[in-house]
Amino acid sequence: AIVVKSIKFTLKLNKMKNSTEDTEKPRGWLTIHVKGAKPFSMWIADIKKEMWKEMDTNAFLFRDEERLTKAKSEIAQLKQQYKEVHLEDRSNVFNSDLRAALELGFMLDLAEIVIAGALARKESRGAHYRTDYPKRDDANWLKHTIATYSQEGLVLTYKPVTITKYTPTERHY
Image (cartoon, rainbow, N blue to C red; front, side, top):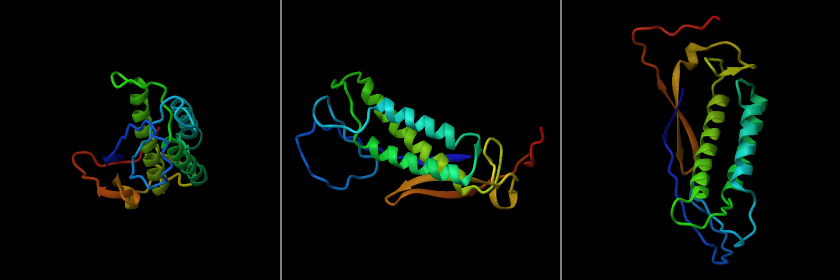
């Protein structure tokens, strides 16, 4: 299981004052362009469509290291494009474009977390099936994966599973 401990997200509604500053922005920073203010890389829907396609193709039920690594790279590119996302709606009230942009940011974070957890877990378990590691490995992987973000980026840590009434066993269908 992948548990998201904390994702900090900062939003700055920026109406682009023709600034050309190229300063480093903190994690989660989002510059929002209003129509006609500045050229933009992609629309929200385009980034979302590419993310879904990438996750469906390379990080779906049957996974392997090569495809997961490709998905990791593609999601990283989409996260870069997302930093300069374009919004059509300028309103300050009931702005569905802004809501969609925020949701997309969270979805991209979760895609990154799913891929990182799948790459780290060198086994198959439940709905996580690695074709390059088809066997379950309780000795090394009977633990929870916890994903957090730090200044350096995504960090995976682990927590032991507490066995209570039922001992985990391999499923046979």
